[in-house]
Amino acid sequence: DAGVTQSPTHLIKTRGQQVTLRCSPKSGHDTVSWYQQALGQGPQFIFQYYEEEERQRGNFPDRFSGHQFPNYSSELNVNALLLGDSALYLCASSLGLGDTQYFGPGTRLTVL
Amino acid sequence: KNQVEQSPQSLIILEGKNCTLQCNYTVSPFSNLRWYKQDTGRGPVSLTIMTFSENTKSNGRYTATLDADTKQSSLHITASQLSDSASYICVVSGDNTDKLIFGTGTRLQVFP
Image (cartoon, rainbow over all chains, first blue to last red; front, side, top):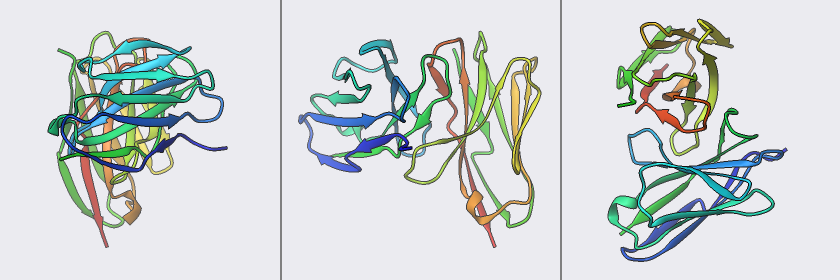
């Protein structure tokens, strides 16, 4: 039973570029949440997808967008990258809303 | 403002010793509180989850307590092991949604 998987593991981009991060939820899970974790900080909620729709959103600009596919996998897109976007991006999946979230290993994004 | 504060920020103990980590929150309304363990560069892993009516919950050598009146929680680690070296994050859910509010974590280092 595969847990939450994310790709790529590491990514280096330059300012102004766009990036797409991918997440496959734990088997049987239908809800995906994305978090940004800066070095030495706790994760910050970006948004959550359920039934292919964005259900909740944290305090992130519109440069951050996402998508959920019929197989429940999800993508996080960030446009016009800034140096401050450098962080570990975590994906978490759960079965429905309010259930315990299981986290993936994260994608380390570095913006130069 | 909904906040979760943890102390100490970092902690060093010797293998075999016990330790207690603290979490104070101002989140209201309160739904549940979770403790996660996060190894460096990895996603957080859930240790315990407690609702309003629960005072204590154990998971092996980890025991979490919750005082909903004072809005405080603690995580007690018994007979620490080298593998306990990690960040421990307190996470509070303010309602029945998945919008989790994370503390900044306590960095625990266990030395032989």
